[in-house]
Length: 381
Image (tube, rainbow, N blue to C red; front, side, top):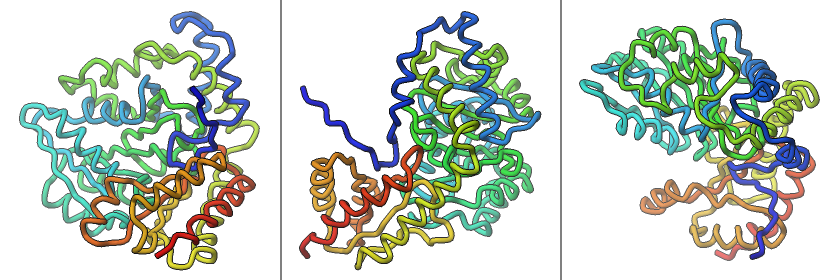
């Protein structure tokens, strides 16, 4: 069976560079052996640096995905008889609400505040919801992958705390691609994963949590087993994971976080992502007549650009362009299909996305965009 080798311009998993692929071939090790600590101690320190985490915050690494980390935050930090407000600006904000509904405890209530796709959190509307529902916990999305919207996350967390609630943040598609200074953001727990801005294969949920969150978790019942923040934190104190990790991915995580912190440098990495966002915006505005950015530029993500396509484009059209790009060695993102299906039902233009995160660089991106343009502008009305 022939497996195509493609450069991924989707929103995750992302392109993995050669050095990171080769790191998977480093020696295997026992995850309860001293060899484990040689890897995990620097990994934890590197992740703290990327998060800007001081003494009030610690890290856990959860085998699975970003979704596992998010579900851990729900299961461990929402108690019986509490209300959780799930704030959504798109599909992955909705996912947090689905997780809350799937993990209801006696007396627990999950309510939702939804904004239209392409919009960011409107703080006045959030304040109204906080006054109405009086939640104990609020979930927020830092970067909505389906729409390319980055929310004013620090302001939203500050507002949540003003009303005495605990903010939990999904930062899956922005961590490693922009500053995520946890002390400034003020989240009680901030979840992410390996396969997006960190440019690694999927396999770990990563989270930073506050001492306040851990103390609350200790008093929460029915935390589950693999979703128990307290158990994960106890393992992390020994530079371990609660359950068996993917050891090849651990080696890759060590190599990549060393690269981000000590070789490329975090400031340079974040600047590169901002440059790729600007390159993509200029491409849409100057090279693609009839196309436009889906969100307001003020809230446009540094890691993924969502584009509104002309009305004569169907999902089948976008999928056909995707197959043409495959012939050139690229995997294109033909839009978030659930959202596109909803837009089509309303006779509204569909969207496509360009993932420019991780180790995609400012040389690779324009080359891809030029090939993409060839097919987009030749679609017949």
